[in-house]
Length: 172
View (tube, rainbow, N blue to C red):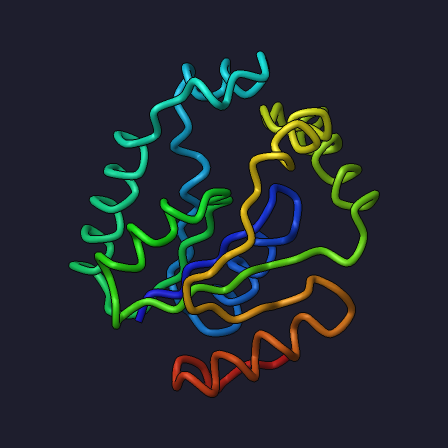
């Protein structure tokens, strides 16, 4: 099964993916790291509307197929802001995919995380890019589960994965 974590930048997708990897041993893949220079430049220039993301999502699909050759069960995290891209991935991998919308309880904390990553690690996505991209966020219509990144996210993620038969040794 593919667990696909999606949500706005800084919502906690990577944190939850790493938590699942640590607690369940499932491979976690961050698709956002595949952004190319053209995509990053468009985001910073506030020209997202000019991007054709067809090649990018074709690469994401190819990568998911490649991971399926290595293991049956794994986690992918990616912002995937627009519904037609989610639906395309859903249609390709259904019924072997579960989408999980990761949300943050605290938008100020979300922005602070992004700015810290940008400063400390050179991450190209900062709070300014996050705010700009909010106008492009589309709430999901595809079948999905929700996780709220807050104090109980570990327990919620554990219950969700155990329900799917993916993880039984979770310690936290």
